[in-house]
Length: 204
Length: 204
Image 1: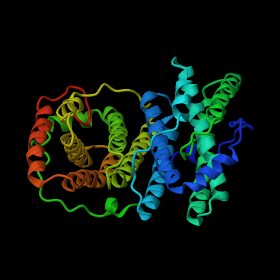
Image 2 (image 1 turned 135 degrees about the vertical axis):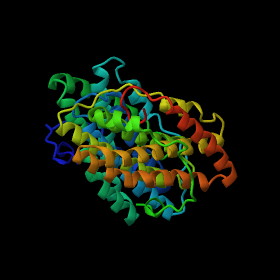
Image 3 (image 1 turned 90 degrees about the vertical axis):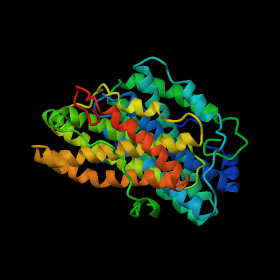
């Protein structure tokens, strides 16, 4: 594994998330563990897809595949872990309507390079940061010990993941550009969750 | 890891490849180790992409993600291994024009389900089988000991990969349908290589 992936990523104190997750979401999530597990499986699969998509889009970008390929592998490992719990509980992997969260963020990614690259890193980092915050909540509040342990284990890597997206941005863009853009996208991210999606999802 | 991935895949004696690779290809490949390494990196990345694409397309198909997710991770591991050799040699990962091989095979995949699924498995298996054959040749004929060792290591997994695609097909389609379709697609695959692509590629 490339050192740049496994080393601790030093990042300044960045406030990725403007609003904290509400208690209403925690209650919705712990009352619907099957839906949350299913949606979580899809989130891990999609996160691997995003990393691979960036590797395809920026194939010649030095130092990018070296960190995104191990990240994609780790997301797939998490996907397999959630899938095995679903299987053990007799739940089948099936399509689930997505909440508007992902598409709202995607729509706010600038279409022109190099801003598109910066926005893509920041949006991926924001999603990882929110997943991390919510997994931490589930690792504390879920009444199901197997699920508490699952989330506690996975959130360690999730924290590393948004650090990686930060580092990818920080190595390529100046700090002012990044923080200005992150503030704007973080606002979009938090606003997308203000009106809670009625179905139980990781990003309701 | 799911048992169905790591267990030895028993498959009948299937002739995936109708024509053997020519000596001309071996000579072209060992005279252009940098291009072959670069193209090989792209092949591993694309193979991971194909596995992930099938996981997205057939998300509710029982037993599919359980084997394709570890397969995608293994392809990414191989990609990283080739990438680290490229980096150590001072070669940068860069775009490389693809030979017509992949697009000829893709064009021959039936558009309608469930044949599209069968064809997708068989085409992926054929590409793995050809990669396996050629890596074996490079593991013997390359004058570069580091590359001989690389190919010798990787081809063990490549053999398992086409076994996995065979098993995915065999669990879902009747044997006659599979062998008839495999014969047709294997003919397309071998014909696509009859006129050797002038640039050094894994599938020239």
